[in-house]
Image 1 (spheres, one colour):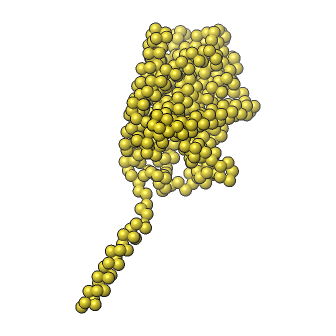
Image 2 (cartoon, one colour):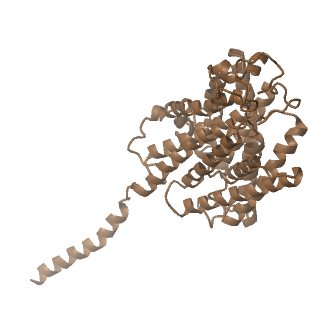
Image 3 (spheres, rainbow, N blue to C red):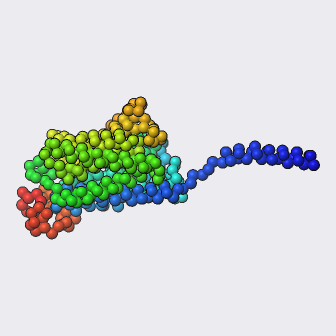
Length: 457
């Protein structure tokens, strides 16, 4: 009996000692979280509505004869870039680094056509990789759409479509890989929570380059070129503001405290920039305008985008305050002094706002908000600011040089600029055979094809 009891105790002790080791050696597989997945999918839908919203925002600021073309530039790009993203864009941006070809610059083609992504969980999250793919798809869609504001009212549709496809492949995808896909700028330590570098600086600089290469609209600086429908612009701005919560808070990739923090920072910056822009124009011009309020809120949203998941609420307010001021002067003063025709201020709002936001991230980022981030200059570390500045320079170089090369290629294939008669008649009727209105918003006259070259509406 004693022998049996001794064997039993020995066996029990052995099990007691080995069981924890067995548990410790078993790595728990990542699990899907339905709440996180739902939030990311809803955020993807919110970001989707931003692109049609951008069409309204831009559409209200052009003349009535070009409104459909302007909206078409945003709407068509939803289809064009979504297909490009599924077939090629995702693997270029988020595929394994193509180390044997261009290390740290572009992803390999291992996930072409989304191969191998079904049933997978995205690294470091509790969401399906497909949810991450569709969320990032909406980012890829809106980025080239932002550029269209710089050359509104004067380009041919064929050239626009070809350029945007090439731009997404050869400019957006590499930049997304370098910053978000584990490439060179990611290794450098650059932080871009939701797209200040990848989206706003890149699109703003590309827009500036294009508007200079294409040239000014006929009559720019000599004749009044006025927004035809400001209520449409305000509707577009409201849709953008609404969708931006998915843009920024959705980038937390989960329904968690970081998402809530980014949501608050987004609202704080947008609200403050709305006020600061309106105050600036009120002081300078004597009247506060609804166009100024709409522009100010977008400037604040742009500036907080790279910082939203890294900064506390009060720094977000300061970022918005400065964004409204610097973007206002970029639009109202700098553009006039330099004389370029950035039709709807893609560079003044997105390029300048994104630049300020990337710098501000290097100043106010703190690991107290996001342990996965870094501390900025105001929290005792200057390395992040250095990484941000280097990344800004890379974005400016890629946006300007890449756009210049692609413009030359596209223009050699098909003319980019509409000719004078087409521009006077209106791009809507010439390129698409459509009119938005049966009568002119400005004059009440019936809208046939105009032969008087002095008319601008």
